[in-house]
Image (cartoon, rainbow, N blue to C red; front, side, top):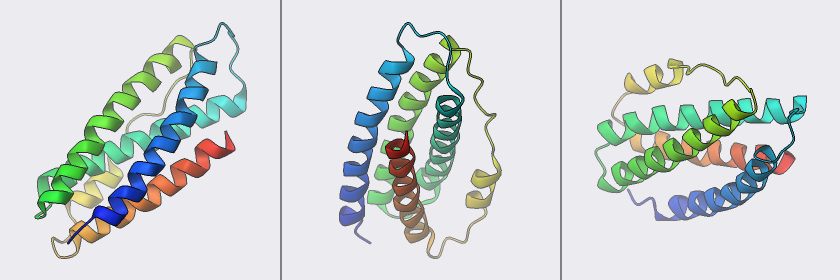
Length: 139
């Protein structure tokens, strides 16, 4: 299984999302003290999505039988863990409480049948990144 076309799509989405996130985080890091409800909702949704991607990608890095998928999953774990830490730091500084980590999705992926695991994982990551781009565009 080659993941290059999907990986390229996701990487371009990640770059776009990162640019939008940087703009949002700059706003959050500003001197403004009150965070609007819409911004608070955005931060909570972004945090939840980021945590789920890390959890599912950790499982993919362990369970995948494809070296490209393993490498890609590990890259997502590293990138999203760093982004989640930055988001947590900014949210804390603005007194925004982030949602608790939900291990439901991770549990489902750890029980997933090995047959088709890699394709299902890549499909999920493409879908999740499309959703993330939509979320950031709306913000």
